[in-house]
Image 1 (cartoon, rainbow, N blue to C red):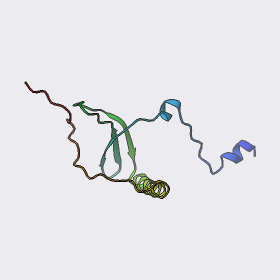
Image 2 (spheres, rainbow, N blue to C red):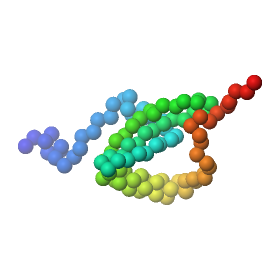
Image 3 (cartoon, rainbow, N blue to C red):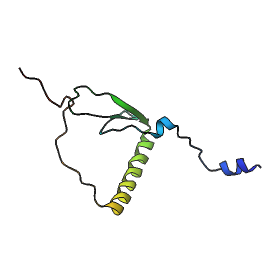
Length: 104
């Protein structure tokens, strides 16, 4: 058996393209689900912009959604242990058409 085959056994090879590595900023996630899938839409809401677009959509099985929930929880706990509690500001959700309105 070659070294390449030995190193691949039991490992996942993941490639990260440069365009994906840059990431997409999101300050709103909209989550919907059906019996067979969870759909997470990531949106970037900007002040004064009346219409915003979904920047990325991730579709997960219910099992993977639960694994993501656990992984996020574990990472938040580690982050808070290292950097202190993340403050959750209890503000009313922003309306999707927030921003200045014109008046005559």
